[in-house]
Image (cartoon, rainbow, N blue to C red; front, side, top):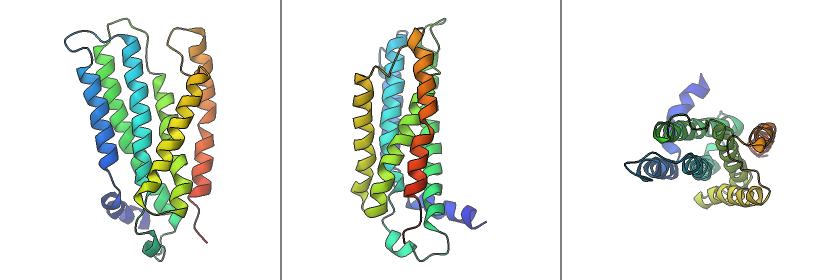
Length: 200
């Protein structure tokens, strides 16, 4: 019950502007790219990947608690508050990414390769952004701490680009690489678990 009672004030305290901007940009691009014509599957995949990176970077700002110096005295532990922020941010960006995917899926020609595997990529992007920000937020309660998540995510994106970790559908690498993406999902969760601990 204390956790449920905490959700409404936390939802008001979270800075949702980065998520709203990233979601609006992702949806806008999904609509306006190649207007009046079918969307090339390659372009659709690029839009979904860009949406995952943008939303992952935006979600990181939800972990910043500018009032943590005073909320540390409340009966609800810090780890509960931070995990609640994580889940709310994750749910919001999941809805935004799903909406973008729906627009893209409706615009690609019938019979095109499925792009659903991009959901695993988006999930890891969001978790990486959150995990990148969580240690910074633990030490710094100011809004710029959220930029650490974006910085970590963009570095990882560049590194994985050089490692050819972003294959295209209907290739031999598609299933194999996404198996590695799935295997990597627990890693940012472990970072979050460590960073969300109560501050002694």
